[in-house]
Every structure is written in C-alpha cells, then in structure tokens.
Amino acid sequence: MKGSKLAELYDANNENALYWTDGKVVYFREDKIKNADIGSFEQFPGCWAKDKNYCYSGGSKLKDGDSLTFEILNYAFAKDKNSVWTLEGRILEADAKTFEVCDTGKKSLGITFILTENNRKQGKESFVPYGFAKDANNVFYYDFQGKTKVVKKAIPSSFKSLNDGDFGYDENSVFYGKNILSKANPKTWKKLHDKYFYSIDQNRVYYFNRLIKDADAESFEIVFVSSIFETPTQYAKDKNHFYLNDTICSSEEFEKYVAETIARNKEAESKIKR
Image 1 (cartoon, rainbow, N blue to C red):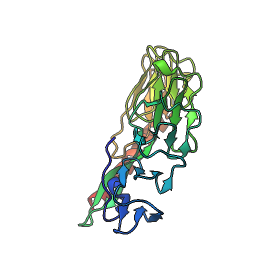
Image 2: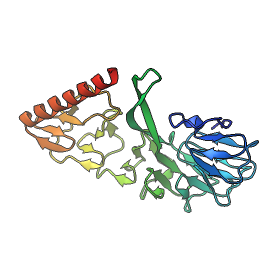
Image 3: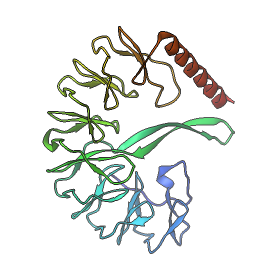
Image 4: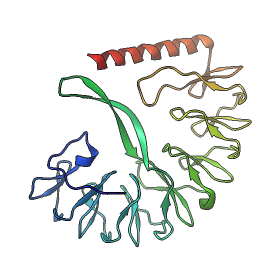
C-alpha cells in the first residue's frame, strides 16, 4: 500500500489529511506527535504512518516497530520483519513471516451527511478498519472492538473472506466474524445481498450467525425497501412467514414496518435536499 506526504491542514473529512504539519511539528488530527521526523514522514490509509525512526498507529508509536521493514497491508493490518499489528496493538499469536491479509480491511459504517460550501447536505460513506487475515497457523479477525480475535476452528490454508468485513469460509465451515454459522455447508452457502445479513445454504437460512429455525431456504427472499442508507432495514419472507431481521411477524406488522421505513427514508431524503 502506497503512502503519501503530510498535509498542511487537518481535514476530518479527508483521510489523507489526518496527519498534517505546521512546518514545525507533525500532528495526528489535533494531537502533536513528539519527535516525529517531518522530512521522512509518510502516511497511509487506515491511520498508519512511519518516518525514518518510528512506526505509528494513529498518534501512537508502535513499540519496537522496525521502520525499515514496516509494511501497511490494508486498513486494519500492518507488519514488519518481527511483528504484526492492528490499530489496537500487536497480535502476539501472529507469525510475521507467513502473515497475509484476506480482504481490504475496511467495512462501511453507512452514509453520514456533511455540509458543503453552499450549505447543501452531502452524503459521505464512512469506513472503519475491519476484516480477516491469516498466517500458517491461525485465521484472525479484527472488528475495531478491542484486540484481534483468533477464529477458532478456521483452517488457514482454505480460508477466504467475502471482503465485506463480516463473513468468511473455509473447506468445512462458514464464519460471521469469529463465530461459526452452525451446520452451514460452505459448498452451497451464499450471502443473499452485499448490504443485507441474510444468507442460506441448501437447507438453512441465517441472519448474521443466527439460524432462523423455521425459515424455508428454497422460497426465502429479501424484501427490498429503497433506502438512502448504506445498511438498510432487513426485511424478508418465505412461503410461510414474514421476517423483520430474524423475527417472525404477521403480514399486518410487516406492512406497518415497511411503511414506517419508507416514511423515514423520505424524511431523510427531504433533509438532504434542503
């Protein structure tokens, strides 16, 4: 992953201007970074940086990080010749020599709105570091919540990520983050839509990693409700039931929830146009 030079001003809406300098000191956002070298300082997507002396995660120096071999792998993971890091710190279980990322290391948080120069509201997609990685011994998952998790029972040699920040699979199992989808068959399993959390195999239906016990996999389908938001409300149905997330509801309740969602979307759209 290529780096870029320091910005002259901090811009909260521009990830390439989170590190900046006034010509005397290097800053991360509004905080000074002590002893950072301006001339050799290089920043990378995902709040990573380095100079000739140190490696950085946000405004913090990575203890014992080797600047010469420091390599940013994606938004969530970085390594040098000795160690592997996420933004929360070193992954003690990881083997730097065989470590590799499985995806881009970022997940969409959805659409936020900012004011433009002419006071118009503009939608902007936001991301956080999320994703899977692996080495010769383990599969790892980072979800921007505490330390990186080892994905137990995952097989590194056959593991693959869907690159959505959520799902992955190997030759035996399907995973939502570090959690297994019980009894899911990876040979027939599929996620139904990139912005929804429903998935199926030939016999079962899942919401996140939860099995929807009474759902019919053959007739199950998502009910798409138009939304300006990156992560829409989750509605679905099969030949027997209607679903709000993974909860069965009546047809009357379903129609009510859908109508309320459409109304909220229209209200949000009208605010953007003001």
